[in-house]
Image: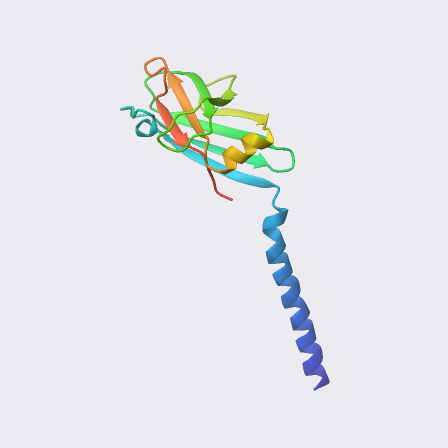
Length: 149
């Protein structure tokens, strides 16, 4: 009977420790992964384009630094400008929240610190990425940024 109690006690301690670790894991996450799929029909107004793209990003919640990689193909020409816009939900437009600067050839990589208000809008799904070309100066492809975790 003593071995049974010891075994049960050890099992209970392991189970409680495991549950505690499971419950703390989301609170300890220091980054959020974000993504967007870019297409012409998601532009406002919609654009007929065979271009497409993707945004993969992560937000460091301790430093509020946003890192991103934007890839694209099939656009009517070189990207002339690129931006994160917000706050706006799909179907709405908004001003530039973060300009994407530097070499705009795919893949575009960059990072920037965000304000608390910017983080709030981004994490609420109210930011989108827009790629502009000479043929479509208002934007050829667009995608709403969503959080994966």
